[in-house]
Image 1 (tube, rainbow, N blue to C red):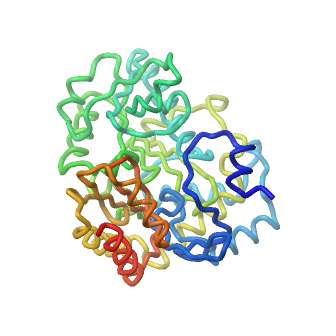
Image 2 (cartoon, rainbow, N blue to C red; image 1 turned 135 degrees about the vertical axis):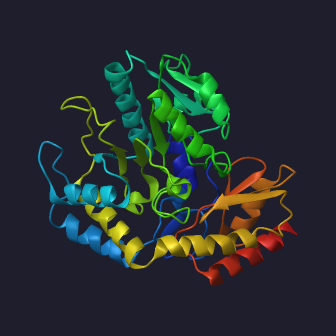
Length: 386
C-alpha cells in the first residue's frame, strides 16, 4: 500500500515542499501523526488556528450551523454574515465589509477597490505603492503587489500598477508618489520574510502622507490581525486607522474566510463590481463569530501579549543573531544558513516551527499557548540549537 506522501506525490500538484510527517488529528496546541506521536504546534497552520486544534466552541459552532444552513450564495441575506460584519466593524473602525475566502482574495478586493476609487477621485490614478519583501497572496495581482521576485518572476508579464519601495522607509514612499499613485499598501508586520515589524513612527508617517496627498492607506492584516500581535489589530500599536484593511487566516479559526473592510471614503463598490460565490457563507461566518467571541471572552488578546514576551525571552539563548516580533508573532535569525535543518530537528523532537528561509525561524502559535508549553518548546529548541 502506498503511503500518504507517496499518494500525494502521485496525485497532488507539487506546489510546495512538505515536511515528512502526516497529521491525522489535533487537540489544543498539539498535533498527532499517523503513529500517534504528538507534536507541540508553534505554527498553527501558518497563523491560522488562533484557538488551536478542535477547540470545543469552534466544533460546536461548526456542528450547529452545518445542521441549519451551510451555503446560499450572496444572492440573499443571511444572519451569520451580517452579524460577523457588525462585530468586525465594532472591533476595528467605522467601515463596511466584503467577505471572501482567503487573504489573497481580500487583498485582490482591496486592489480593485483602490483602482475604482482612483478613477473617481484621482483622475484615473491606479498605481499602488507596496514594499519590497512583502507578501499579499498568490493571485496574479497580489503576487505582483508583493515585492518578492521569486514568487512573481515565473508568471511574467505581470500586471502594471505596482511600485515597490523599501519597508520602514517613509521617505521612499514620499519619493515614489506621483500623480498616478492611488494608494499605499503595507503589512504592519512583514510576516512571510521573517516577521519584520514596522519601525516606531513608520506607520504614522505613511498615514500622514496619505492624508496629505489624498491617497488610500491599505493595511494587510491577514497574518497580524485578530489578537496575533497583542492588540486586536497590529495597526492599533501605532494609534492609526487605515482606509482599507484586509483579514483572513485566523478569522475562521481554521475554516477558510477572508474579509476586506473599507471606510466610508474608500467604500466605492456598487452592485456587480465585485463578488464571491462562497464568500461569507453562513457556515464560515458562524464559526468566525465564535472565534471572535472566544478571543474576547477568554482575554486572548492580552494573553497573546503576555505570552509573546515569554516566547521572545525563550528565543534569546538559541545562538541567534536577532530575535524580533510582537505578541505571538515571533522570529529569530541565525547567522549561518541552518534554519531548515533546525526546523527538521525540532520536528523530529516533537516541536513544529517554521523556517521561512535559510536563516530565519518563524513562530506563530495558537493564542491559547501557555507558559508551560513555552518552557517545553524552549527546552527542545535549546537542545536542538546545541
